[in-house]
Image (cartoon, rainbow, N blue to C red; front, side):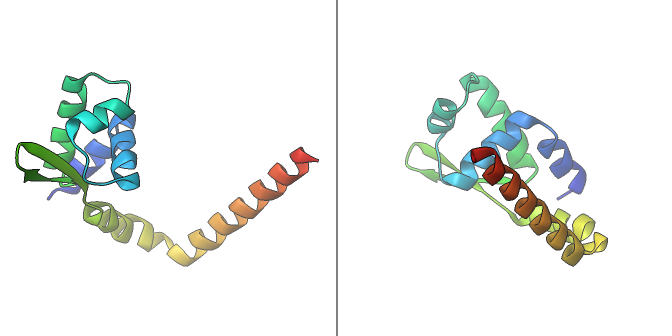
Amino acid sequence: MSMDAVFKALADPSRRALLDSLHARTGQTLGELCAEHSMSRQAVAKHLLLLEQANLVVVQWRGREKLHYLNPVPIHDIADRWIGKFERTRLRVLAKLKRRLEAEIDDSQED
């Protein structure tokens, strides 16, 4: 699978929102995904097809229902290829520092 297809699929905020939904609850039907998003059934189906082509979503048929499952492997491959080379440990420390600072700001705003 081409990383270009994965990047193209991840470039759209609607497709990222669908992936977030599948991350929260994988194995959803088209109807369930449509109910969560303010998109037409055709738009969701089109986005899902692109996500399937990028191998970010895999489908399984259960009778007449087509269930959509998140496949995290392509995202992991991107993380290994692109984030790993930028010293993941440093990034993890910076992300932790960012979360702490944001928490302190939130705490001070509550007072």
